[in-house]
Length: 117
Image (cartoon, rainbow, N blue to C red; front, top):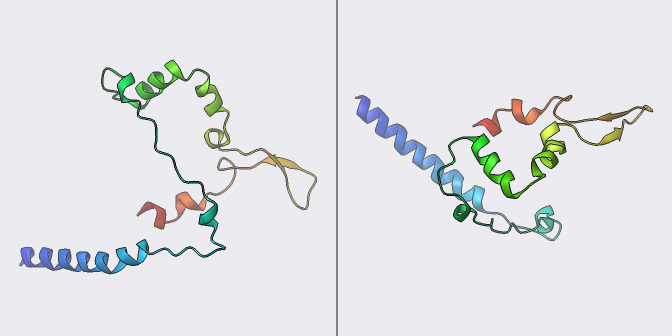
């Protein structure tokens, strides 16, 4: 009985994916589509020939990168993405300027269910 239930669930899941997946792939770009202005991503440069052994942790990777890319660690640490704060911005309706970002606002991307599925 349990095996039959598993097969039914599997077949149903495949059927749902078959119905949803193709429709998600169909994208038509009209002349006003913002996607027409997104630059085409270039292939990443393959760095594997620079390394002799495995990189087991994130800090190992960082240390390996900054051997050649000197100064990049400080540049990344000062970025808006790393600091979770943007540039000084005038707040409408006040004379105040604030640095706004994920550090001091509610981020609905992280608390919304869909991105976490």
